[in-house]
Image 1 (cartoon, rainbow, N blue to C red):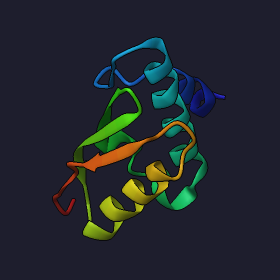
Image 2 (image 1 turned 90 degrees about the vertical axis):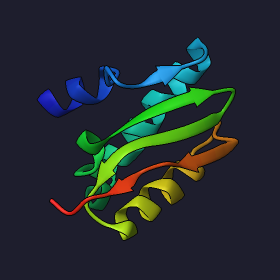
Image 3 (image 1 turned 30 degrees about the vertical axis):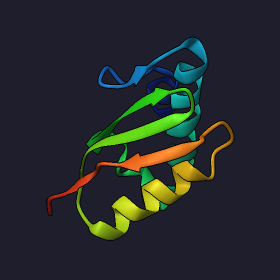
Amino acid sequence: TDTDRAIDTANPGDRAGSDQDRRLNQSIRQAIAADGALAVALDGFSLTSVGGIVTLHGTVNSAERARAVGDRVAGIAGVERVINALQVAPR
C-alpha cells in the first residue's frame, strides 16, 4: 500500500550515524505508524540516531503527543536514550 511504501522510505530529514542507526530510524517510524494515536505525528518530526541515541526534532500539536512519541521511541529495541527536542505548536 502507499502507507507501507511511505513507512519503508526514510524520511529526508532523518539522519543516522551508521547503517544500524538508519535501520533503527526505520524501526522507530514503523512502530509509530503502527500506533494509530501517534501515526498522525509522523509528518511533524525527524529523527537523528547515533549509536542508539535518538534525538526527536520537529513540531507536534500537544505536549501529551510529544511525551507519548518520546515514550514510544524509548521502548524500541536498540534505543539507548531519547533526546526529545519536539516543539509544541497547535495546528
